[in-house]
Length: 182
View (spheres, rainbow, N blue to C red):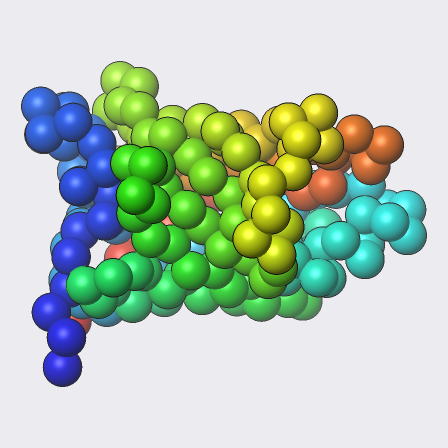
């Protein structure tokens, strides 16, 4: 069985890691397999283009107060994140790029982020997008605001994705509590 690596810990400056909230450190570095559950509010445009893009990228469908379960599987080369929402499942593969960025693959798209500590949270700053391995012009990438922090002692997340001509593709925020670590 391959050993695991703490991907987020390797992509943040060593001095920043101890300053993150305890729940953030646990979610992003503890164990080879992490299972967590919680609640999420999901919004997004309702027009056909947004619905189709969400489906292709396995993004969650809108709905308030959705139960969410997350499984993170870590190994030496990557992390596999599986998120189950009320009506949809979202899967992505995360790895460290040779550019020192976090690369998250969602279907045919790879998002490239730099990670920064902001107070006790991690901010993911979008640097570029690749479609089937080819870089997209920055003007087509839109904005992705993503933050992993703490609220009320729990791991909290806040993601907002907006695209030109589409508007808000998806936004989801909520909390998770770790149920099991192996």
